[in-house]
Length: 188
Ligand code: URA
Image (tube, rainbow, N blue to C red; front, side, top):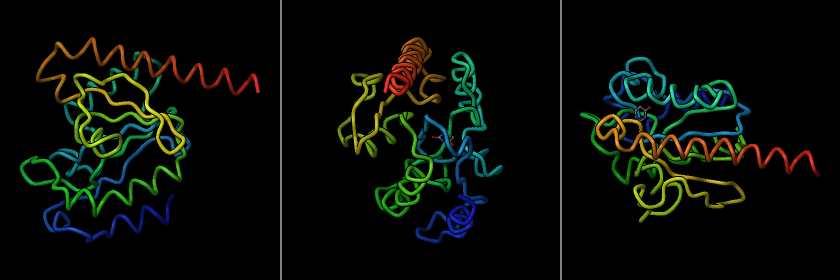
């Protein structure tokens, strides 16, 4: 992962490289079973070079903690784009296209059992372009031999706390799915 990280840190594939302070490569357990994918870095992430370190990151850490998970403990966290879109706008399709290859390589290296997309942008890129989080959250799909699920973005939960129990249930489903997978492995 180290050589690859060095390559990504020098990326100039789109104009976000001109306004970023730091490339937010991703962080966590490089052999994690769970890969969480957000949308893109915000101001604090750009400042620190780490994903989900602002308010929504604190909420994400709380969710993980409820299920005895943590970044670095069977979890890796990355984003669809690795540089901050100015003013926290959505990353453009061009920026997503330029960046997504890095994430695909990260997925190959980490080889997670389950991918969880946090929010609409990640789910529409990774699952299906008409994915609706409010309707399809918590459902596991199989894609390229991996399980993948979409749930609410922590920032959306902060804006609308009614989503909190729904997202909590999705993380409970994630825990159950991992248990089921490891049970199957021990039976083999
Ligand atoms: N929101 C995201 O989607 N990703 C981050 O890293 C931080 C906030």
